[in-house]
Length: 413
Image 1 (cartoon, rainbow, N blue to C red):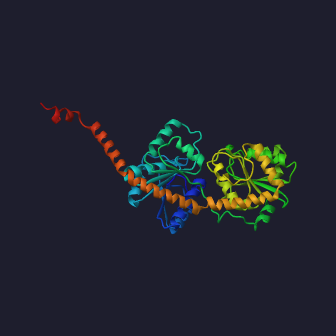
Image 2: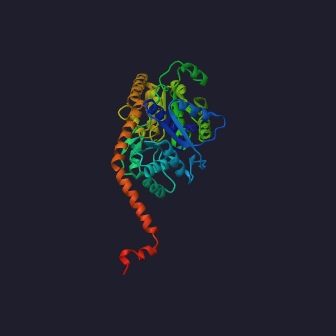
């Protein structure tokens, strides 16, 4: 369960979608609990109907949502989700995103009220959070009811363990649909022609939201420098409030004809296959799904060797580690001048993704964590029951009328 699911599209939403389909294909009865959203054209209803045909039931909870956050914040939510849990008789709860109130409330209710095994996946790096100390306290309280946590990278695991040191944290990365992202030369020529690229051009592609932390401006400056020596183009796939700034920077550097913006696209595979090198200058990535998608399409990748990205590169990159924009530029130029190295790294990347990040692999590891959580829950159920009885006893003692204590058998003359 999570606040974030279709019709919103993003990393968490895609993860839930693919994981649920693979779990259902293995014979599991899968339910997705998420918030209710506006369905203007019946698209959500059609989507949910298709999922039912796959054996996936979607429950959409109505409640007050913070628009900017896109999450349900409603005091009634615990009663609502508890009713769904009771009615459907769930055997295991998997919460997605520790920042999703709906997910964490559901996990808390399932464990506290129903003693159901619970697992939560942290998809994000902690970063700077408003009211950090209060938020950490809330998370620690919620985590006491979890049987296991999953982190999408070692960087996220280390981040999670800073405020949850007494629970097992398993590293299971996001997956890639390798039937959707694969090397396909059929459309390469037509896509390049549509974008105005010549076959001799070396196309550098980047995919992601155009926000400051992605540092897309560094790529614009890199292309400005490299265009003096090489026939290169920069293809920026994605949208965001930084787009105007990036376009203005391209004009000021005199390289507008070298930079193309596609805007938001739901499936960037065609643009990836029309390109020669993938690059990303971000220094803040929990994992980097766009990097995996590029590798699945047999592209060499030039990225910074930082936090979650390091898990992707581990033992497979074949380029000098990059820590800043200068390193990125040098590695891109190395690939531009060495076509053999480009081809070698591209094929290696596809094999690496198939072995470590394909959804069947991810699903198998996740089901192993489910088995672990069920075993732990069975062992610790008496402890939780004892904790609940003790808490109830404390409440009863606080509520007990004073006169009953005064006239107890021990106080009678």
